[in-house]
Figure 1 (cartoon, rainbow, N blue to C red):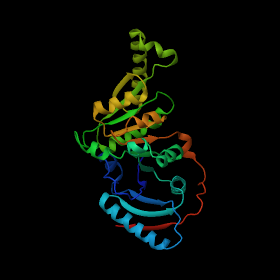
Figure 2 (cartoon, rainbow, N blue to C red):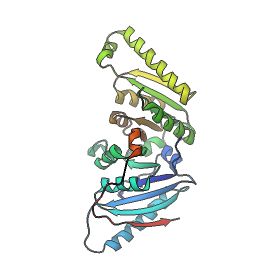
Figure 3 (cartoon, rainbow, N blue to C red):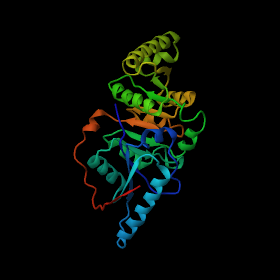
Figure 4 (cartoon, rainbow, N blue to C red):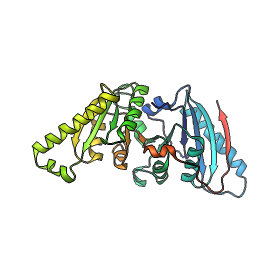
Length: 290
């Protein structure tokens, strides 16, 4: 089971940087955790680079003091292409998790940098949408908003569900398991034949129950016919979820857009990723704030 004691947070220090969603804060802002705030400058200033780095380090320190109360904070600045720099830090420092922010609707559901990092990173990724902090803070509150876990009923389920069980326990909320029964290929008859739909749904629920009983006894089950994004989105809204845990397709990720943060668990092969990629010309400034 995971313990997120070393968390990397790439931030851009723009005015719209928001407060962490309650579920995310309860997972990472704890006394035995170390959070590294990373700011990447993609421009290459010819003069006063040291002075600019000092100013950015001060901004990171102020940001860290405003946002976090329990975790220890480290600061880091790099110069280069943002996605490459972030991935290089991930591969060299091996954090337990990385927290990224999704884009505004005008820039697409995922910022290009976030999408590129999530496609390559070898560790679990926490994704916050630009507006979810306010959404997640409303409703029933962080203590009662459950964790939803999207299962594909394939070989990714054990890894995804293990992370979901840990997250729900850390936050202290119930766990709801969701599966979208897509009417494709041989299952397309579910769209017009109630008997086929009932049979396929019962089979999927039985498979989910077997997984649930092994890894997450007591978790709720929900099976709906439809494509992943709308089915998972409905489950998030139905349960007023404070976090979605998912793996596999990007479609599951986007189901939580503007609804709740996502803990994305990539393929197991990524956790065995090799050496860091070259990022071109970089410069590192590192420090620590209280």
